[in-house]
Length: 383
Image (cartoon, rainbow, N blue to C red):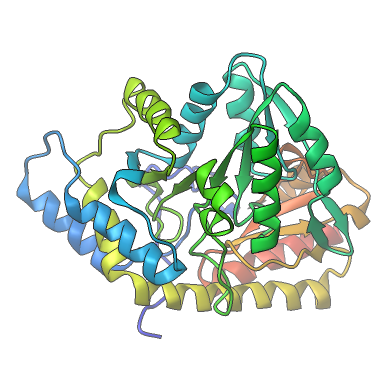
């Protein structure tokens, strides 16, 4: 490989949320990576910093072009410039969309287990969570379309938040599945917001399906949130985009973003995104290979050493969903036991809607990953 993903980088002293842990602990929870970003991105940020003046920033044409070209070349989907809005982040955007497109006490539909922050955003904005759980059989998650149609038909349901690819189960939704979601949503007057922040983190031989490419109804009645931050480890830069093809929907979201001061880029947001999309492709492809090898290492380790912990098969993201139900212990108690006995810090699955499951972040050098797996084995052996 051209890029060194085996290099261990000390993140202490950087105000890292992930590494704000006790001495000797190993955090493998929150979704950021322990890899330095693509060199071209660092160079672009340093070049901008060396200018020394950090006033208010505008959005140049190159920002739009970078997004448009990346999605057209990588994902065979064409955006138009007017369809793109800047936002400081996907999560703030989702919160704005909830306020812009629903009223208090309306219902927002989700497919659990799903990213726990979705629950928080819905509740904090005074809306009700309408959970339509995914079915789970033999390690495979799927949508119960009968239940989904019933949920969409509820007159209080106004918005559906979709995770595509799905966090935490790592599933890439098929074109037919997405088209069926779009068909039902349009029939019942529900807008679909597709969070596609993990879309570039697929296995090397896999490609995600953009929601907008699934059908014309998906394109006409959807909102898509995208960003280079997950794929290129740039969460702290606060840079993302919202794509909305329908002009009326776009106007509502644009207004809410502006009211909440989320539509103005910081001094590095444009440069980082442009460098990622224009010069980061080779780095990303090597990263995907490395993550896939990490995933295989986890699967083999669990099979050989902790057979009661089952890895849910995934095709995307660097977040693995571990089925620990055979251990007969709740996930909150289990994560606390693992952390207190070994210092390994994993994510409790219960807030996602997956009690008995754990989420493991494998975006780290292989030596760190194996350290974490050995700690996991020790903790399970101590139960």
